[in-house]
Length: 213
Ligand SMILES: [Cu+2]
Image (cartoon, rainbow, N blue to C red; front, side, top):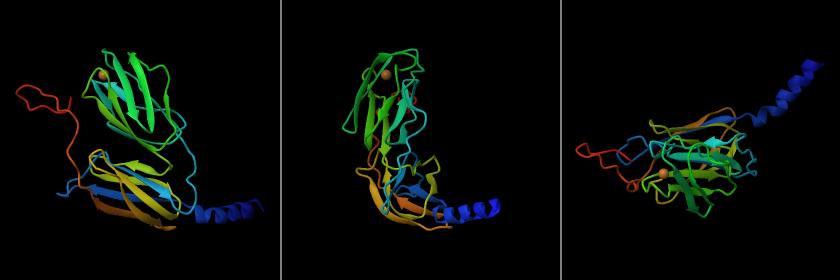
């Protein structure tokens, strides 16, 4: 009887079985693009609210934000620990979240919660070159591309989605419609992103050409 009930339960769950959706992001020269954010907004049902259970971390180390791009679902919080010996003054003037963490060392007083979807640009009042992005999305299905340009969104229920692809160097997010079928992983689909210039301030290391400060 228990076994039957279990089987019935499994059958009922079957239409909800999730699949992965994979993306490959390249530039005009077919080179992989890191730090692109892919989010899948369901078109047939509202996206479930599933903010991160514990705060996500964006550290300040060697006078840089780490990581450069972070993606979270709306309602999630971020911790901003300062791992440098110098003080930082983290701020955002972006519409999706305006805040500042006045000059501090060590742990910031409390995590910052991001309730509204949108792109939040982070800066530091002391160090002009410090730049990072928080992409706040209204869906639990998202991924960020690695150095290989691959982004895979796990556990996506079958259905129709609007895939939004964002990158710091894109003038605007790219959108594509995508259907995730039951029992079949979607993709990888390749997307060519026409990137604009890198707005990060280069660190001028004398005689060495420098990297990013
Ligand atoms: Cu700073």
